[in-house]
Image 1: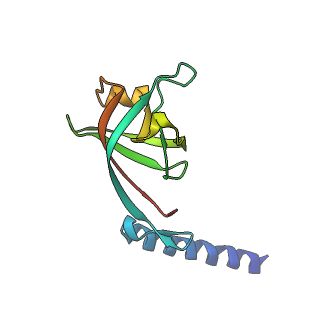
Image 2 (image 1 turned 135 degrees about the horizontal axis):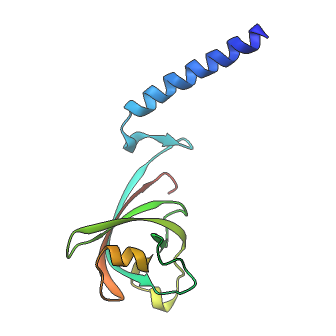
Image 3 (image 1 turned 180 degrees about the vertical axis):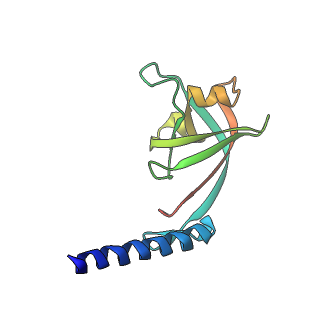
Length: 130
């Protein structure tokens, strides 16, 4: 039993030390899956989804290349308002989406004070899946 307790304590100490190192590291160099985080910024046309089957109070988006689960900062360059959306799916490669970089929920568009179905947007996010 004492060997097990010593092993558990040494594991806890190692985790605490690792946490301190991770906290001190800049997030840009934080590594997961042995790959560093890479930052992306995209500028272009965005659209919002008007679907009654989707929860209108959630902030989510569809993106072509960002992995599902990625949090993207979407900024309206006209008024500098922004919202964080979670990628919940891949933006389909259809004619309707030809020049669209992201589709966001209606709640997200409302937060950005978007009036038109299509609008200019700036996207900022980071991922280690590239």
